[in-house]
Image 1: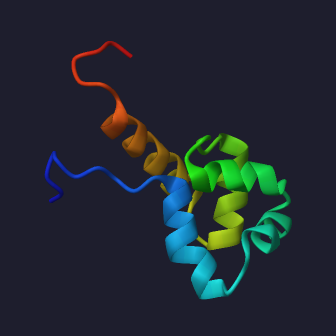
Image 2 (image 1 turned 180 degrees about the vertical axis):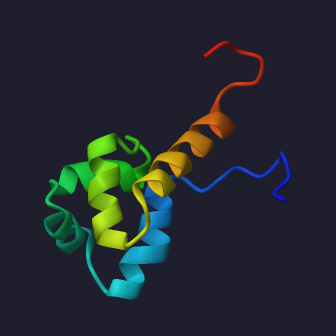
Length: 88
């Protein structure tokens, strides 16, 4: 079980660290393979944007991981990064 003090990895970081190196793809090549702009992928990797439903579908096809995996990873990251005590 993961402790409450552990922040889940951001989806873009997970993609950049766990999927792109193994495939020996640059972000530009990965963006083309997913059918998204390099800016979309760069924003995800840099943490400037999150996983939308459309992007989750594209990431699923690209990575072999399910759409719910990508959506749940984003949701877990969002929950972990939410300010304590604040209403959402």
